[in-house]
Amino acid sequence: ASLDAYYARLLRSRKQTVWLNADVLPGPGLPTCAFDADDFVRTCRRLDGAIPSLGWRCDVGLAGAYSDEDADAMLALVRKHGLATSPAVVFAANLRIALRDPRP
Image (spheres, rainbow, N blue to C red):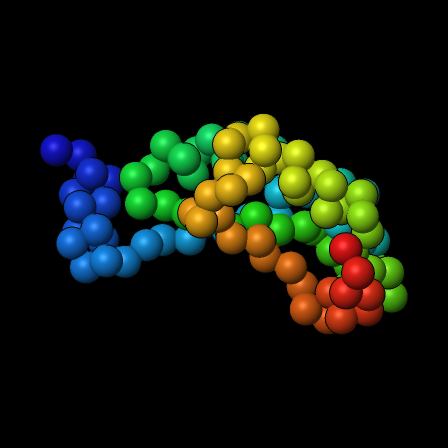
């Protein structure tokens, strides 16, 4: 058996999960992102027991707040990969930015 299968079984036996986190979409103040969102989600889904933790790349300085467009882009990503109603996905938002405007 492969090492990743061994660790997946071990994690399940202990009722543990691994969250794989990346800022996969551009967010407030930063127009680009270093990760390919689709590749990251596909990789997470291939790893047994892994939960994708998806975030936005942000400038925490004076950049604004999360926008409706930011939320729509994340929703489109999770819908594309069949995760829109899944409990096995985490959204990683920057609290300092989210508090600037909790609307979206």
